Length: 254
Image 1 (spheres, rainbow, N blue to C red):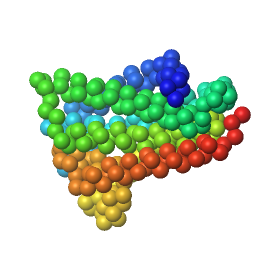
Image 2: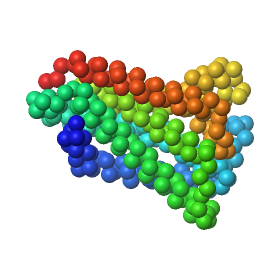
Image 3: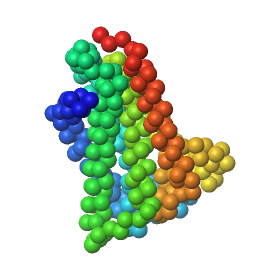
Image 4: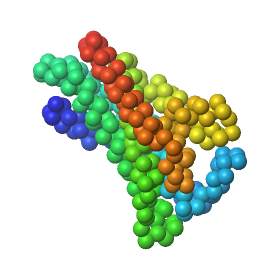
């Protein structure tokens, strides 16, 4: 297992895409923070009552990581799996005596680590620009901000697991477009939280999707049922991991 992880991280660290994505993640974090600081009411939901200030911008901007980072993580999964399948890497791992469970888990851990690295770079850029823009001496960590970060990491990991499952189903292939479309569909559930107060159906659906709570963090208020949302994310990670592992155990590796 350790050898597989070392090989995966070596492959990741020598990939130009990995470093380009790190820079892109940091850029978008800085860009969104600066943009929302300069244009605080631009593109806000109608009647949302949200006005961006130094007191809530660090609650809203990080939430966009749940929209942007899964796309970067999904593309990383597609690139790495495409290389593994096309170059016979997986077959060589099996011949060397590694089990399919070890291969799957090593891929999952390496790809999830890449996604978390993208998220950390995004967050650092957000904080750096916010500190510069608002002349902060430092930022007081609040329970809501910590909870938000934990939820974002879990949502990003859910997306990564789904991407790995899709990648193995399609055997490498041209995965990127399909995976990105699926991630876009998952991200649509985020908007439920923006309108749930005005629509009973939206409110009901919002209770089922952890993403829908992200906008509640904009005023650093931990939404009701946060434990349930975190539990749903954890269950989704386990379920998709098990499904992906079962499929990978049975699929034909050429």
